[in-house]
Image (tube, rainbow, N blue to C red; front, side, top):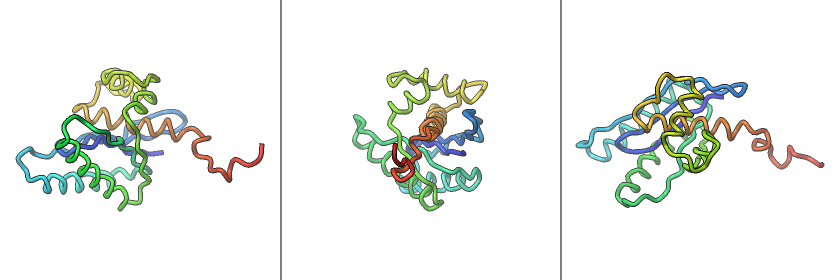
Length: 170
């Protein structure tokens, strides 16, 4: 399975593509789509959209895992992040990718085994699971890779993939 993880934003969109087979992870590619602070907001959204479309076309993921948006202290920031998240979801939908959302606590639990782990612990476990020399920078990129790992762990559970029709009588 190949998963594109996204840490949404409008200044920096972290992304990471991970292959998962036989309980082993392999990083395919990762980075960040960055937009300049002085650029008009709608142009920043266009740049995020174009960047994510190019990543999808180049890496051919089978699914997109993205952080579920939660309220932050700054309402102006959360609205901008929500709008950036929207263009990411649009790019994924247009590419026909199934979209999965995870909360920060779900990511912490999936990557470290502890839902209240600190950011540094999640980043270090991401580095270890992907056999990387160093934690990817910027932090948004490491977060995106952790998001992809979360989906791999979650979707790897066969019970999660069974529909009620597949379960059958006991």
